[in-house]
Image 1 (tube, one colour):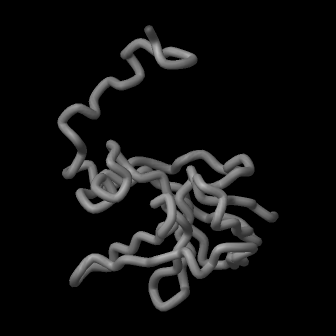
Image 2: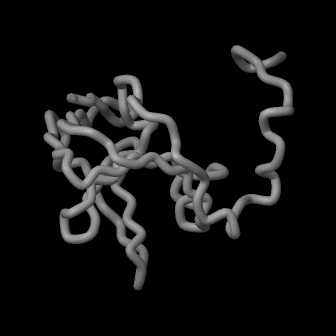
Image 3: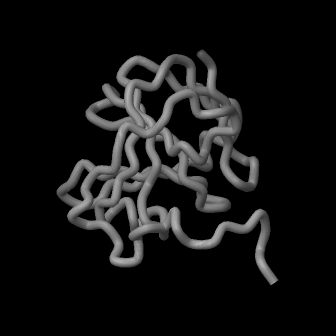
Amino acid sequence: MTHKGSCLCGEVVFEVNGDFEDFFLCHCKWCRKDTGSAHAANLFSSTASIKWISGEDSVKSFQYKSTQHVKAFCTNCGSALPNTQMDGALLVVPAGSLNTDVPIQPKGHIFLAYKANWDNNLGEIPQFEKLPG
């Protein structure tokens, strides 16, 4: 299966060829900082490959000191982008970076010990199709 994705500004375009084995919503303190949100939504594959269609030179990776935490992003717009970890054995793809439908559902929330204090019962708050006002 081929999955297509890009950054927000469109400078970086990529394709992922293969299947995702896992999909987790990570609440660790590093993923919360990376996203500025309650959690990251990452797809994982040990068999898929990534092909950079354009903008590969605008992709920068950051590894947090003394951890395995890696974030790749567009140097122009800051969008989260795929990266490889574990010496290239694992491809990690931010689900929101895909332009095509995500083929699997999240398997679970991880690192709940770091969950944001405001991240409770979010399904119960009002929902709007656009900015209310």
